[in-house]
Length: 209
Image 1 (cartoon, helix red, strand yellow):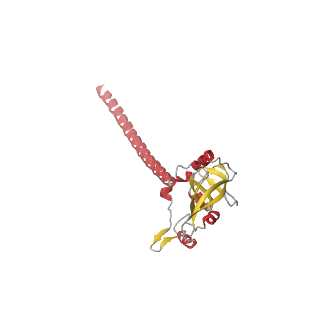
Image 2 (cartoon, helix red, strand yellow):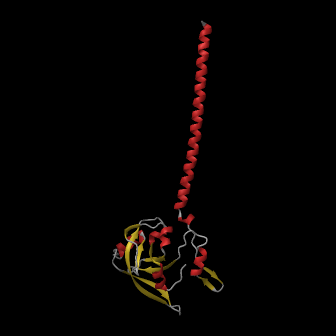
Image 3 (cartoon, helix red, strand yellow):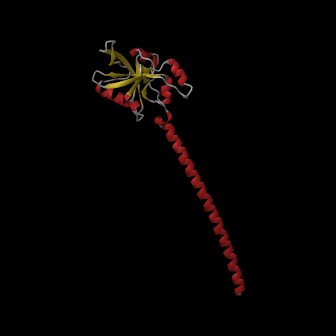
């Protein structure tokens, strides 16, 4: 009787031990899968954050200085730079001031600038063939709307300061038509305005940066 009881207990112990081994294997496999999934998730998230960061994905090339003065970026240099970048977006920029004294920069840029910086409209439309049409950053739009009474489709005036050959300042008053404004981007774009490159170049007779 005792021998039979011992055999029964031994068999149950083996089954219980087998169950624990299988359970341990299952927990171990699940843990490895969870760790690998977590690591892959962190990797994908890190890549997505890098792709969102303009500071890590965009390189800005500016004019340089030599002994004989400023070296501008010509159209031929732009073609050379295109060999090293997926999207090359030449632009010009100038500082303007509104009648109320609000200073802001207008960037003249090609279509690629909008793509590279992922600019999205909040309201209005992109500039078309209109010579002095501009798109405003969200912060700039809010400021000009409140202080200068800016409205989409209504011309506003601003002064561009140029300098003559004698070094004396020359104020040039220009009329712009806001045709839209951008969604907030959380960076310097919110305080800028944008227009077509060819028109911006003509306003101050600049070559592209």
